[in-house]
Image (cartoon, rainbow, N blue to C red; front, side, top):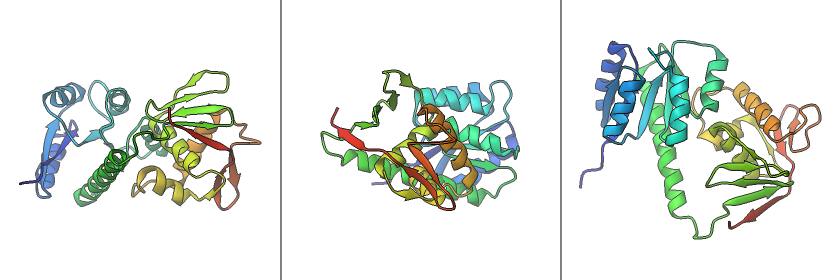
Length: 245
């Protein structure tokens, strides 16, 4: 029986890039569909499932960041942001909105293929792990009065307030609570949180830690939960309790 085809949606207003990528991805057994803007992207998604979206940042009408934000409220489909802008903050914002990787133009098509394959491999592994999980998983984690519901991706403060988390913040917090009271280097955090996206830089982890501290009301000048270990990385200092529901 033939394996199902990997379907990739390319959202870019540059017709030459769309055609190039659609043709190139087909050489690696992928079916690629092009979309000019957000409206065409939504129509394509309504017509059939895709395994991954390559999403340009600068689009006519609704831009890529806004589209990524909307996607994350509706789906967990992997997203690779594609842009000609080199501002590091664009990368961080894209990742915080839930993008899985970020590729700057100009780029080598073979590099994009490698990133797609890495993300899809990690996605399959995560789904296989979830399928093999016991019937009563630790879906609620408690630490220092906080509660993280892993299925709902909902963080609740000791005062009972729900604190919204971006995709990137949720993944980083999950890494910390799975490995409490251990020094984790930036490289380890990158590996654990996103399968080591190839071009992700250490500074993005520092910014995500800063934002996560804000969500956890952790004083950056004297943090009690996420401590900085100079020259080594970060240390999640918390007593973690796991619950079935």
